[in-house]
Length: 119
Image 1: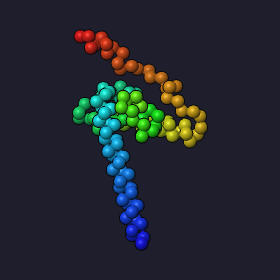
Image 2 (image 1 turned 30 degrees about the horizontal axis):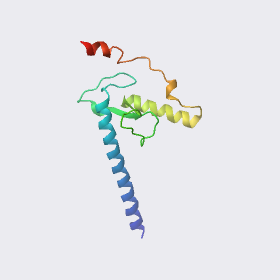
Image 3 (image 1 turned 90 degrees about the vertical axis):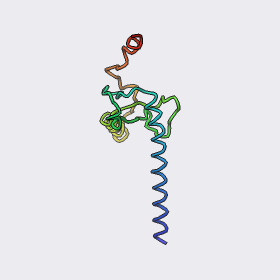
Image 4 (image 1 turned 60 degrees about the vertical axis):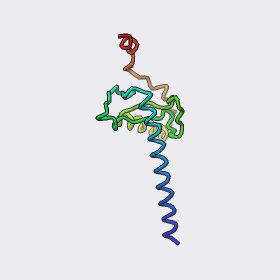
């Protein structure tokens, strides 16, 4: 009886991991097509060689919120993504309100994009 329960739990966990991997693969592929391969925080640029280090961050921290226009996503390098989640966890754990709109970017990597596109 116990081995049947364990097998059932193992199957549930395996299925959940499979669903998560499929969901992640889908929104990651879409995000990489929508956005330039640049970290939205530190402006590090990525190529096919190091693309595995570029992650998709959900702005509202809800991995099930994946609108087709990508409005809930931003591309972050592994380090900035880890920092973003650490700050969020600290806010939840120690109080205060976490509001990403309060976080102001100090650099806009696309500021001269219109000029570059005209060339």
